[in-house]
Length: 471
Length: 143
Image 1 (cartoon, helix red, strand yellow):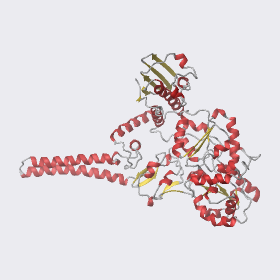
Image 2 (cartoon, chains in turn purple, brown):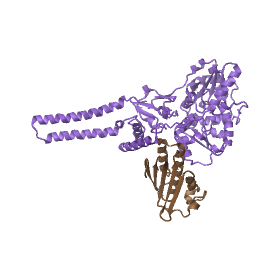
Image 3 (tube, chains in turn yellow, brown):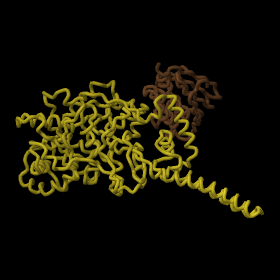
């Protein structure tokens, strides 16, 4: 487990990073540290929520995703638009215009994630009804939430709804239907998801609950948007009848949409990663009663708030509502031949104790005591100058062997202060004593040597911080 | 405490009950960092939270000490409140002596003590009317 390198779609473009503390303070899992003037992400704590991408004023924090030329890698391509895509356009009153534009863009077919979402809602309703012993069940559509639970809330793992997210169900069915329709081998078909967020880019490479994802590539909504606009003008003239999603499916793109699909009063829906964490803490302490379903979205507003979208999430939410007004409640129903592994999880999510300090409890306790002692030395300002988000985080980094006390600028200030005092007493004693020339010069030289070596050590420690090669 | 690997002490002040739970939250986070099995953490967190909030609602706060040994986690919750008049009644699910202002906020469901008993391996209540109450609980570590 310790050596497993998680794939992360969120990454740092070092050239653009100026080492400010904004992302390190914002990261909900304290996964970022400034080292060598660059804000690097610690892999095992990152959940790909994209908050750092959202806040970085220098556009240094970015997400990996595929480019439209990925279509040329496949003989036949199917687009999987997320329902949040529909909310990005002004004056859209017919989803088929977007879907037709996707065909004009070069896709051979489309399979709406919203359509798969209606299948997931149907299967989820049944599962929740049949498993009251697992109440409340937590939605697993947002991969960052599942990743967060996996490392920080192990007691909630049993409450995860073990059903594939709509995007994965869409991918499986899309490939199956495309193979049937064209007679091509499944491997020749490209299933391309159009995503509002980095978290789902990571999901496609490292899914949860299933060994491998059927998604071949992920495009960003913001990349596709300018391509689609002129195509939509064309498509509006005679849109093809491609949409198979109703209010429930389209509603998934927005906060509260998932819970609406479960049709229960005993639910809780939280959006925004800080709110999600608060809910998870309270859930863990069993402070809620009578809940059967919990919808959690890392992004404010739900998926429309993902960092790869174009439109303001609150405007987008209103647009989805408007689109929904003319749709039937549900269009897609679970097909009779829906296979077990297409819809249900085939793998368990396992607890990854990345927050544990040591390898045994005794060791962890010793380390924790060291952390407490170190914290007493630090001023508790959480200023971020050391590159860690809080003084406590720096103390932990030091105890984990990843940092040095001298990173703290206030400890450095104290050391410079005591050096200054030594200088002062040198000057004072030099003028206080009447000495013969040679004695005076000799003692003076000794003092200077000692002070110089102290300063050099301090200087070396400062440069050590600069040259430190960390993760 | 003999063979205690780690001793944690908290003062629970009777401020407001939105803050009640800070001590049990701190213990929960520390136990996660120590790598204590999740099921043990769950029991300790719930038992301690219920005890903590009892101290705020009924007893004007108090002091909590937690000792971690290789075999078990010990919790002692001590207050100088009014004491418990009838322990057997208090242990009944649904029975509550919480004041109205507390009940109107959703607390005082009468499940605190039963929950503490459910989530601990041993529980002992010592109380003297007019002087205070001490609740001690242990949660055993797995073999």
